[in-house]
Image 1 (cartoon, rainbow, N blue to C red):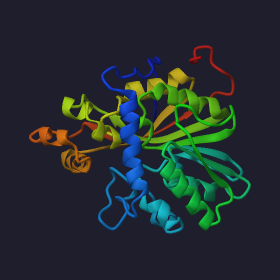
Image 2 (tube, rainbow, N blue to C red; image 1 turned 90 degrees about the horizontal axis):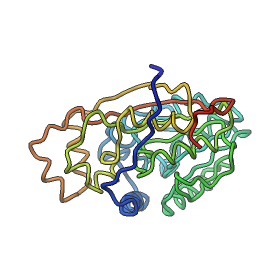
Image 3 (spheres, rainbow, N blue to C red; image 1 turned 45 degrees about the vertical axis):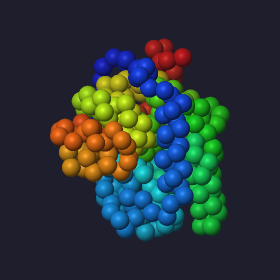
Image 4 (cartoon, rainbow, N blue to C red; image 1 turned 90 degrees about the vertical axis):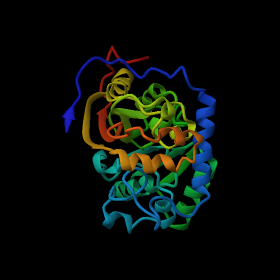
Length: 291
């Protein structure tokens, strides 16, 4: 675990992508996932690149609704670093089928509250249905983009996100919104895919790769710079897991992209890593924080 220091440069917006096309590609992928019964958390295989695998303790997974586990598509477990306590209010950005929201609900207890935000109507429908069927009274799911969170300022003790911020074409705006909805002293805890070196152009411009959490990834400097630029302090990388060639190659195959054939012969080792990062909203607004 290391606290990251340095100047805040923010996250530059990509000029070589169509933001609307990115959002469509992401929604199409997660709509398809919401309408299936299994994912990489299912019996067909579990990997650390997407879904459960060894990301969650088995003792926790068995307590969660199977419908939420089946459509998990994360790259880590943000609840493991969020240090949730009973009575807290948690906001889950990109909540999907609800695996992290339901896990958080157990940790904050009946006096706490969890609000999941997702831009895919089918995921919201599925998560709400699961919550109702399993009696989760301290969880709600709202339709909305994580760049424009449908919540008032200063409502959350903790904001979590699992492999979703990398999907946004405007990550700086996501960090500003997370900062806005947090109470002073509140925590941001994310698991996400971070870029270790420049991606091949075939991956960088591929919308399928973007919707699979790879093409939209940015460097550690940019990612953490975006947090600091939004006003966050005490930014700490809690864990890094670097992906080697075989794992990333198998993962990109699942995009079913025409661009994938161009990747043959390229070394995909150590292009990206799964990061767990925490940051804190200061109790007093820093003058240098972004407006």
